[in-house]
Length: 90
Image 1 (cartoon, rainbow, N blue to C red):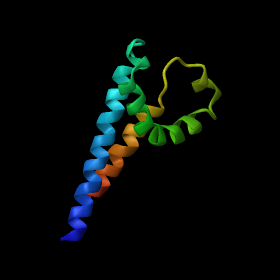
Image 2: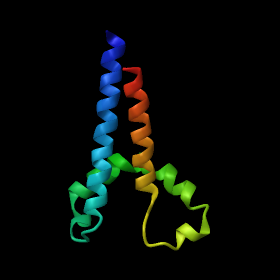
Image 3: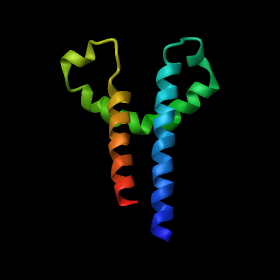
């Protein structure tokens, strides 16, 4: 019983992080929103998830010169895989 509660909580946290990543991506398209507390809050929550992927992608010279940041997309895909794994255990 307790294991299922912990799994459900972990799945909920992963889903919340996925939504926060989507919100961060949408907010990043609007420069006036990037100066708000809400954007800062979303970045503080999601940056620990995104940063390892950004560090990994910085190793590739061709990706550094691109105007798009793929680290959030990779973080979303990783969270999606983790969610699937947790749901298979549930």
